[in-house]
Image (cartoon, rainbow, N blue to C red; front, side, top):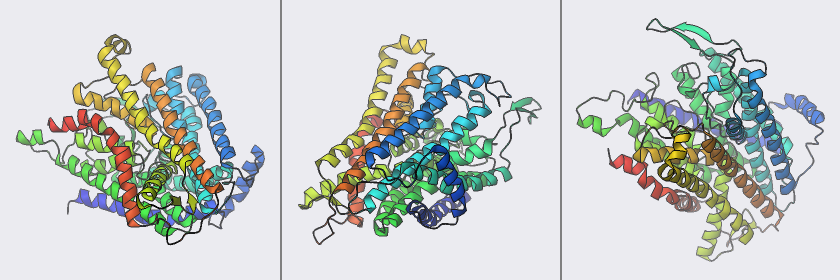
Length: 568
């Protein structure tokens, strides 16, 4: 068997194998059961005392959400100030200037919503100070926010009837100290041993193979790369992200980073089953997500390993497949696998340029983000799937003439309205944003010209570039088709708005649904209860997701990625 394919299979096996015990551990952490990291309790108690928080004070879903939103508002103000002022702050050996207000707005919002969309080059757009006290800090906090939200939803669904869903601050701290930080230390040490920089020195002078001298940035790279992958953050410390030889030096680091992207989102699905003591339901959800992930992986790996058919027609051999925009040391299969791992989650890091990939690979990447439920971001990925479970339960109940129930609670009109708003908001903000950008590009060319022009590629691919940008923003992903000139006030502000809507409206809606369901009278399961842990219901949920989330984007893909594929 091809060694590249063996590498892909090994990575997938490791992801699945490690996610099970990690999911079991995560469930124990959120339930307050004994774990191997209990020695961190004094540190956690000190943090609670310092902030004046009682971690065991129960919150209802409204108080829970209020705490979540206030924390994020505080960090937005913090990030905006530091990014604009970074030029005069310490730890700036390369003398990088402060960001403009509109760029700082986009950067701060992007990292605050766990997206890490970057309209700047990593090594020149930030200083060491803002890399640590904005970027890396946000990568822990925002990942933990999504995990804390899921912990609250799990507590609500596990109870028979309750008005409280736990304490947001406690879940936030536990997510950092017991899950994200320990895993980041392990991954960070592996990266350091493989040659990833970890220090505060300025640029170093190196001599290239051609004999020319070049200045190469360094800095605390290993620490930031570890949490960017584990927290499904994805922001590149260097401008070219994980295709940079210092950010991703070897095939081993490529495997470790790719595994890190998916390990917690996968584990959170198992954690749900363990937390609620409904393992069969957890396995069912995991199976649907894994099937979708493997299908997408097969398509992208095949497309990238086989290359462009037009080149084959010219009689030119494509050694290694479609290698444009890819690292020779990693290969086309590893890039195809990564492109799926990073887009089925809200990670967004890249080890090759998505703009250079085959049209169908680009379509799969965008569909992963447009569907936004196949594992997804840490915590919030499962919560997006939860939205479609509610819709599927309601539809299935109507089809078979049974009262729609989920985990012993009736699903009624109020929950369906919230779920429908959350499900439909995603395609609306993507398609409206893309339509506005396309209209301006075609009908107001002077406006586009004043911003320096947007597209390096006309036609089908140009539309794909604009569609990808809003898709990535709405899914809080952060990757992009880099043919788009996006560091303008229009793209910075419009993407910033889409980023906020794509992050906070779903979280508010999903936590609200769980809180409302938890307050209802518990109904014991009976022979007439619709089973939600069966393969049949799993297929039903999968079809609901495809019909609502995927088909909404077919027309725009017909004009972009599909049209480009047919033109080859």
